[in-house]
Image 1 (spheres, helix red, strand yellow):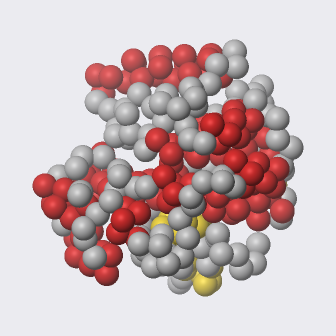
Image 2 (image 1 turned 60 degrees about the horizontal axis):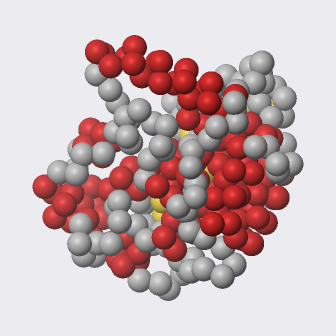
Image 3 (image 1 turned 180 degrees about the vertical axis):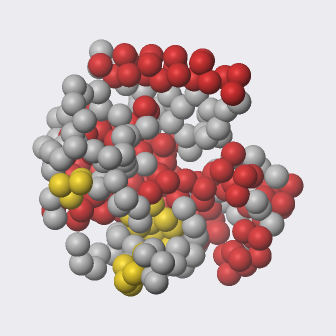
Length: 259
């Protein structure tokens, strides 16, 4: 796909067959969003725009990601910008998929193929997750895990989610500001857009008269934190992966990330 500011750089293959990619100084967007739950609306809007820009570039090469979600993007700590990073399930348009979207992001369809509209459906739900911190139809409320005793209930919840989507019942976006932003998300879910470029143009139009984070803005203020961002390595050393991915705000996280 070549170089693009919204795609993590590829530097070649390692001896063990792995890929050498650009280092993400801020880690994964999903974890980052949980660590900084007070991230400002202007910053969240920037992430929505940049993530969509990455999808536009990917689709321009006839590549579908098939599993778009906030965990497939990373944060650049220096700019607080985001980049797409995981293309492990990517396919050419209309090819059978090898990775299915999570139930909250899945466009109900009769076959196992991907399309531009299935990617855009997942994109809309990913943008909602970024804006709210977790998806309203996520039975774990953003924790990302559940106990074995809850498995049957969670599966029933996923089935109910698919039934609602098939009936055209989607999450309430009436509280999003500006209101035009929620309309863009509904457009993704109702398959009104024919391309990611149309989604990006609609997003830019919706955000034309509101604040969007830009280079040079105060990064600490945008994250609602006192910590100097140059101390990021010290910060992540105090937080285990389990704490990050479960969404648990430990004493150490609170000490560094909360106002």
